[in-house]
Structures are given as structure tokens and as C-alpha cells.
Amino acid sequence: MPTTLVTGATGFVAGHVIEELLAHGHRVRGTVRSLHDPERVAHLRALAARTGGSLELVEADLLDDAGWADAVAGCEYVLHVASPFPATMPRDPRELERTAVDGTLRVLRASAEAGVRRVVTTSSVAAVSAGRPRGETRVRDESDWGDPELAPPYPRSKILAERAAWRFAGEHPEVELTVINPGMVLGPIRHAAAGTSVDTVRRLLNGDLPAVPRLGFCPVDVRDVARAQRLALETPHAAGKRYVCAGDNLWFGDMARMLAEEFGPRGHRVPTRHMPYAMLWAASRFDANLRLALTFAGRPELVSARRAHEDLGWTMRPIRETLADTGDSLIAHGLVTR
Ligand code: NDP
Picture (cartoon, rainbow, N blue to C red):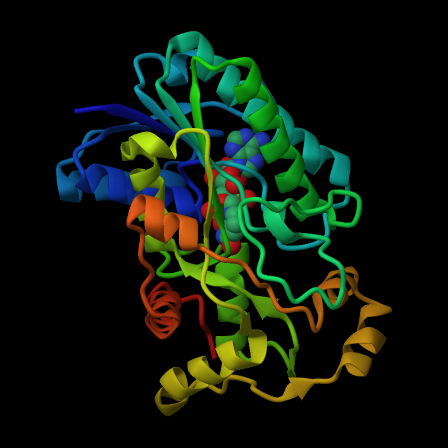
């Protein structure tokens, strides 16, 4: 039974990764920033109790060296999932960058020193395509990189963190590195907190938006991302590779329509009206987050997950199922109030 470290255990993606690993016989150690609030990890403790799996939680912060040597001790694998994913424009983009980059290097350094066999880090399709020129219609893949000079703060933090990871791996061949680049991660939440990506669905179901701007996403189910992470550990020839894990481009309006079809008959009024660019532009003059949306407006997110399909035997469930399960879980956890 391998011992596997998962960083950022309280997070949306990491929770599913832990679930996947426990279901496949891993002994799991998860890092959290603080164990002071038992509520924040109650769902993880309940998961371990329900499955009879072995889960230990330890404290470690990406901004601090303390705790990482103990966290990786005795681990065969490390899944580095933690990284700040702010829902709004960060006040200090440098802090975001520092946490993502220095945190990744801390995890990798500790792993190399402890003799960890493989580290799988969670990057993003942002590291493949953020800052792509407007009008580009080419489908991007793992040979592509986002442009940190043109990318907004969060995508930039992901590009720089992944670059730093590959640089480290180049200098430390004793540690195998594999990178997963997920698209927009949706799917069922396991506790009453919607992360940044799922919050998009929550806002649609709550009718918080008057209309939907033309934004392109390449969504992927969190359970499929978790499976990709496990397959990346188990597949010998995945070492040294990055894997896009994302579906086809889905316009925000199409996502809203699918949700309206599923949840409309149950009384939820999901907005499906198109927000013209001019209206988005006007509203963005007063709202930094809409200014961020403006940079993505009208651009489809075109990436290919062919390598993950071929190398890892990875598959994705239909997006309609993901959206329905996301909505159901938000309702079940009381996060959809209207
Ligand atoms: P969440 O916000 O749910 O989880 C982020 C995790 O990172 C939390 O556990 C958080 O801990 C932890 N974290 C943040 N800052 C620190 C720090 N200084 N030290 C230690 N831990 C820290 O996000 P997701 O689950 O959605 O994202 C997980 C990963 O997947 C991230 O790397 C993200 O960039 C990547 N990703 C996510 C996508 C998505 O659509 N969700 C798409 C592509 C990539 P705490 O609970 O204490 O705040």
C-alpha cells in the first residue's frame, strides 16, 4: 500500500483526489494550512471513516519551510494540488505568484530530499494557453505555453509555477515529475464551500447574473481530474510529461442553457440572455473582476486532451452530467438560496 501526500487537502480538487486515492488502496497524508478548525476537515475525516481508508492530516503552508520535511517523509508519491485560486482580482499579484512558485519549489525540494519517487503537480490549461493572441483558432496542446507577460495574475501564477517545476525537475533527475493541466474544474462539492470554479455554477443557479457574457471554458469533471492524477502516478511512461485534462470549448451561454434545462423545471431561474460585449465593457469600467472577464470575452478555449486519452487511457464523462451533479450538490449543501 503506497503512502501518498496530497497538498491542500481542504481544497475542492484535492478532496476528490483523496477520495480517489483511498478508493484505490493508497495510504493518504494530506497537508492543510491549519488544523485549528475541525469543521474545515470534517468532510475528510468522515470520508476516511466511511471508506475505512487511511488518512492522516498534517500542517504545512506553501509560504513556510516548516512542516514539509515531515509531510513528505516515507511517501512514495506526492500530488501537489495546493495553490491559491482567488475568485476575484488579487490585491497583491506578487503574493499570489510567490505562493504558487515558492510553494511548488518547497514541495519539490522536500520530495527530492526524502527520496519521493514521483511528484504530480496540478497546473492548469492556463499554463498552456493564457495570453493566447485574440483571433487564434489553433487547438493548443502540451507543446504550447501560455504567455506570462500577457496573462492576468492567477493564470500567470500557474505558468510561472509550472515553469519552475520543470526547471527543478531538469536539475533533479532523481525525482520524476508529471504535470496535470486541467480545464475549468466542475463537479460535485463534498462540503458546504464552492471553490472559485464551482461558484460560477452557483451564481447561475442563484440567478445572480442579469445575463451571460460570451466567455469560453473547457470544463472537466473533478472526478475525472482526480482519476487523471492517480493514473499519472501509476503510469510509468507518464514521467516527464504534462497532460491537458479538459473538454471541448463550451460557451458560458451554452452552460447556462444546459443548467436551465436541468434545473428550470425544478424552479431555478437560470439567466440565459446574452450579455453583449458593449454591456460587459461598460460594466467593467467599475468592476475589476469584469475587467478580467473582458480579457477573455469572445475567445474560445481550444485545447486537446488527446495525450491523456492515449497515454493514460483517460476518459471524461459528459459535461451535462457534470453540470447536473454540480448543481445538485450545491443545492444539497444549501448554497443555492433562490
Ligand atoms: P481551492 O481553492 O478549492 O483549493 C486550493 C487549496 O490550496 C486549498 O486547500 C488552500 O488551502 C490551498 N492553499 C492556498 N494557499 C495556500 C498556502 N499558502 N499554503 C498551503 N495551502 C494553500 O481550489 P481548487 O481545488 O479549485 O484548485 C486546486 C488546484 O487546481 C490549484 O492548484 C488550482 O490552481 C488548480 N486548478 C483548478 C482549476 C479549477 O477550475 N478549479 C482549473 C485548473 C487548475 P486553504 O483551504 O487553507 O485556503
